[in-house]
Structures are given as structure tokens and as C-alpha cells.
Length: 175
Image (tube, rainbow, N blue to C red; front, side, top):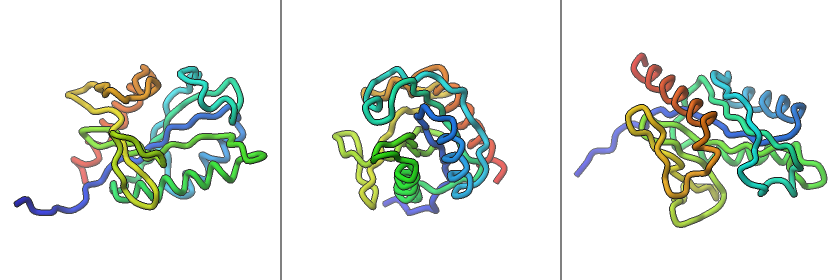
């Protein structure tokens, strides 16, 4: 029988989709107030992988990722997802979101996204939130899974995810 160890720290990140710089700035301020300093921001890229968000959020959407300096435990992610959902709602206009904020966490082995949607490859966490292993790391590469989102396999995303992982590993070694 294995023994239960202490919860390991993981790196909180958020994937963000929006077309409004003003909403992004206000949302980032709310996220920093709640989770602390943002330590890494990817470059922005057009979100043209899907038109899923267009009816609600409009056209010319862009996608970028941020991570936070302060580490969390994996057990925190369900509460964080509920907070980001509330943040999205606070910026909605006529019940339509202006921003999509998808939190997740990075471990040395994988990237986990929090979601409200159940599916065959997702597990229930708590408070109506599921977790999905979105990609894994093998050596110094991001590895695709059958359900990996195409934007998470883009050069922008993989650059961000590898750098965030490197920052996490460095932090864990010096802690």
C-alpha cells in the first residue's frame, strides 16, 4: 500500500479569449487581485481554431495565456474555476460573455484544464468542476493527446507551456 503524501504545489495559469482590450485589462486586474502577480504572459494570437465563441463573443477573437508567480495546490482548481466563471459573468453584456477565462495548472508531467463539462476523458473534481489532462510533457516537449485542443498545440501555446513548466521546476527545486 502506498502512503499519502503532502499535496505538491502546481503552477496556476489561465487561457484567455477575448476581442476587447478593455475587458482583458479589467479581467487581468481582477485575476491579479485574487491570485497574485502574473509572472508570464504569452504573445496574443488570433483565435481562429473554432467559431464556437463567435455567436456569444463576436469576431476577431484573440487568444493568450498567463501564469501566476504564486503556486497553488491541485485541490484549489475547482474553486478557481468557479471564480473565473464569476469574473466572466461580471463582464457580460446582455448575458453574453466578453471574455473566456479557462484556468488550469501545470505540473512537471502535464497540463490540467478545469471545465464545467463532463466527457469520457474528464474526471469530476468538486463543486461542479471536472479536470482534463490536456497535454503531457515528455522530456522537453509538449505531447498531443487525442482530445488536445488545437490552440494548445500551437507554437504560441507550447512556448508558453514549456517556459511555465521550466519556471515551476526551478521554483520547486529552490523551495
